[in-house]
Amino acid sequence: IDQLYIYEKDYINLVLEEARRIKREKGECDYKDFEHLDVFHPAGNAGLDLFLESYKHLPQNITVLDVGSGIGGPGRYVNGKTGWRIYGFDYLQHYVDAAKEITEYSGQGQTIEYHHGDILSDPLPENAFDMAMTTAVFMYIPEGVPGFRNIYKALKPGAIFYWEDYYLLKERDQLNAEERKLLEDFPTQGVRTKNTLLQEMQGVGFELVEWCDFGKEWSEFAWNRAERFLTRHYSEDSKKPLKGELFSYGRIVPQILKDLKHYTPQQIKEKWPVTDRELDSEQVIFNKPEFIGVSRVVFKKPEA
Image (cartoon, rainbow, N blue to C red; front, side, top):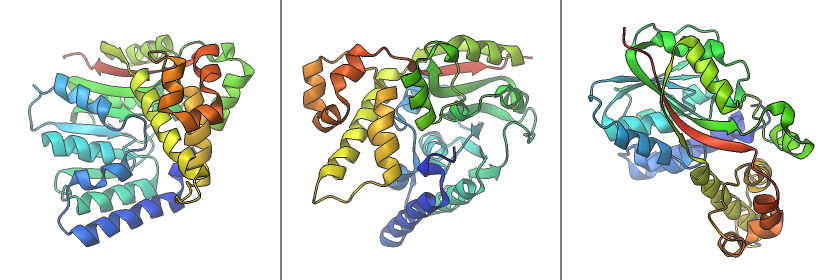
């Protein structure tokens, strides 16, 4: 993850500066005031919205383990929408510190807590959580089974685990040179095939409840974001994107997230004209096969 600018302390300091400005100017804030700052993965909270609608029958007094909680965006969102208590757990100390600060600004500090640790090796409280969630976290972790086992032990019997992340459409050794280079430039060494993920999850004890493809939603988000960054880059009047923004999200990710064949080539050129000129959308989307998908998955720890 050291290759991605969003994990650098300097970038998080920029985010905190903006969060402090919002708090200073507005005074009383809630989670919605920081949503544009604190969710880094594609499609924002759209996947969580679908999950929350499907599982709105869950009681209000549950506690959720947020694995790879980042600077707290998804956890604050879920807490704000449902009232569920959130136990955030992240590998980066400066993320944990930022999450705590923004959560105080949003007025949610009484029902959300954050902890620093390594999901692969640092034990979590056992049989303590009614639900777990993770989004775009294990894409960085090739040997994820110890983490899956840790999460399994932390959940109560009958608890569910919401997962949203990339998955490979073919085995890693079947990727061509261009595909491998893209996954080096945007490091996703932990992305698994569907079969591998299910085998690993079921191997530690989880049951599969549902698997939903979510590639179209992530792809549209990725191309909208690329269009914004590239437009700013080529405009003389706009604030230029950061170098990392331009490289990762303006040029690399749209070549990975390209589940857009529900549009015609002409519609794509009209919808994302700058990105089309930069990447040759017809070549990327229609002439090169997809090699990565995105899934929204619900697993369950069996009842005792």
